[in-house]
Image (cartoon, rainbow, N blue to C red; front, side):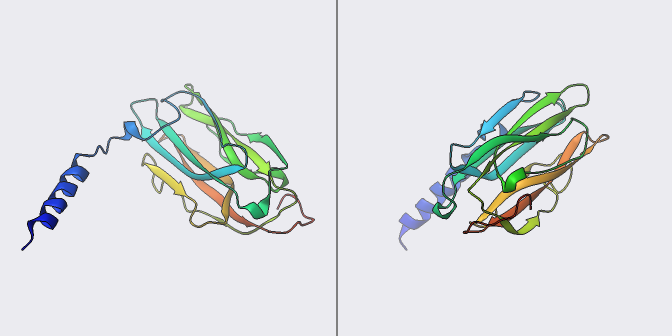
Length: 191
């Protein structure tokens, strides 16, 4: 029996076990109780969102976001803007106006309610329209858990979200609105 594959497997096992599973080295864009403003580079949209909850740190979350260029068929963004804002402690539903796609997020923490206000940065592409829209299940599934959304397949985009806040648990759950976009111009707005 050749011992080389066994030694390689043991080395990989030791390496994997030695890797940190600590939430502090995940590339978070904020610290607890800190506001943030995150925007994807021009021509890119959000494709992944991750957060980690800590009750000890103000019942707040650390956040990280990932972007990806849009398909060439969409062309360049025709315009971008900050859409409507929610108030801390309140339920919120926001879908980018003008058939826009989410290309950024900003948030401010409010100590008085141990919650954040939210606002999406939206971009639209010519006169493309959304279709085959769906809403995710609650993310996180249960309050105070780590949360992660990765857009499930290429060609789907985040258009907005619905979020509820638990005043008892001091945490939010999100349902993200995901849509495909037409590859042709259409006449409809605000779908």
